Length: 156
Image (cartoon, rainbow, N blue to C red; front, side):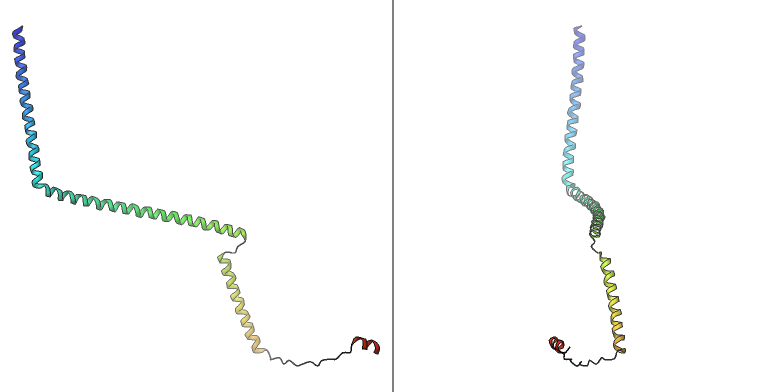
């Protein structure tokens, strides 16, 4: 029985040392790969850096374009909303002024037009009357002399 345990132990030690060797070999390969990557990065670092800059600039241009498009879209929506708000305000003010009896701009314009038409008619009539009218001669009237009321009573 002891022989079996010793044989088993030797087999496990051999397996452990084989596992250790495999782990050491893998660690060595990882270390060498890291050194190789570091050396390659030093050699081609400038190229990679320049490529990253170009890629970053392209992303920045796309982002800026999307942002400008969104800003333009939002400005258009805001303008539309502002126009609607302005129209609502104008309508309410107009209704309030109408209920108070304040004439509208159109009412004042129509009245001004009518006054201009009437003025033209009056001028036309005045010109026609001036051509046909004879100049009036104003003569002085003789002044009547009246007796005082007391004198009239005596005479009666």
